[in-house]
Picture 1 (tube, rainbow, N blue to C red):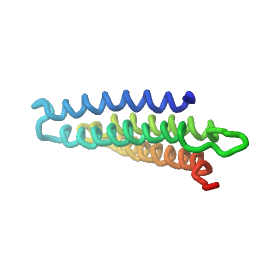
Picture 2: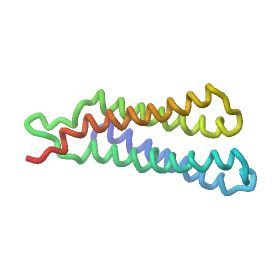
Picture 3: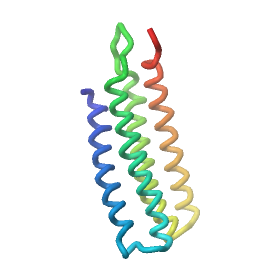
Length: 138
């Protein structure tokens, strides 16, 4: 298993644990209806769908998609690691800025939320660019 795959998969598992903790926290009366409760729901969904599911897919695809002959390369490692870094930085920024927007809105927090989306989008582009050549037929 290539190192990038191990990082994607282990990080996906860490996000899964955090997502489950966030899911439990949302059900506690402490977070009962209000702005913070409303802000934690999209964080929970992002932790699950981006942190766990998307990252797991990226990691398994990097490992298992066919590697073109003759080099049998996994792809561009710079793009692969860039996708990993941008995806996780964007998700972390999202997880921090979404509740902050609900509790202390301001232009800086809004900019952080936009930056988080941009990082996740760039991660997707980087991953697509490196995995695309491995989807060609023979």
